[in-house]
Length: 148
Image (cartoon, rainbow, N blue to C red; front, side, top):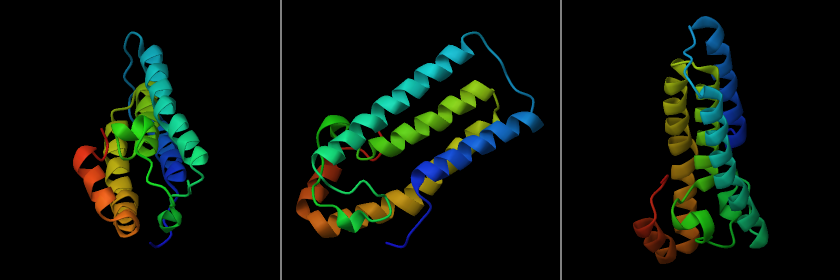
């Protein structure tokens, strides 16, 4: 797999774009906007952090740039419900920033983030995991959705 932009950097770029768009597009405000944003932020962290810890516990690579270095197919924790809880967590962080800044343009940015992560990161990772784990990964894919 060719080296791509690391997903956390891509998410950070998207959040910056969402923030900058709030200067050019009139923001929307609503009751409990801040609270909802913080709740989505917490959900994002609740997806990503335990997933990082599972990879560390199994001593397998956490680098999205080298999926061929994967030594263990992690299928517990959040991985029972999503094949990509770390990316789901990043998406929730970008959604949280969209809510926080109240810009409708953030919706477009979030769709772009999903598109880019799917095609630049997830699909190549899935190909690498299929090569490494074969039938075991194929069975996992049948039972667990890509996002949620």
